[in-house]
Length: 198
Image 1: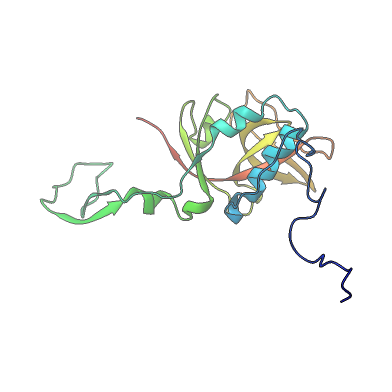
Image 2: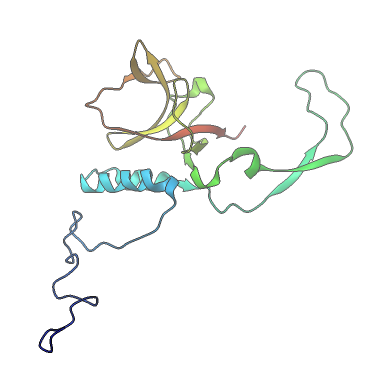
């Protein structure tokens, strides 16, 4: 290298990098590492923000991540409770049962959401129930799914008839919702369990 030449490799270069406030969101951005199972959720939320969808905040607040669950082992009686004639009760506990293990197969891909409305009462899902939703499961015909329709979250049964996919309510007072290309729909996950008071 000649004496009048200068080293230009490495280091900070003038006017390099992304300018502050130059993102599509109109503000500075920050790099972040997130679990792979949550990438579709984050991308969907960012898309709604970018498109100025008013219901984005409502969608975000309905999520209840099920990761990092603490163990809760409760007594499990070895005998079964009779729903017919009464049967003698066992006087001992056979083992314990952790409700997290029973209800949640994939904590990193699972969230909870609370139901509002009565469109799914035929499936045993009532107003104010809590749904356990698994994002790792593939939505399929006949499954109950949580999806966002034009920015609004809803729970319905995913169905197909002669190649036409639609969302079916489990209440005759509500019509089916045909799924067309013009309808903005994102499936958030498959409902695996429902929790409600008796």
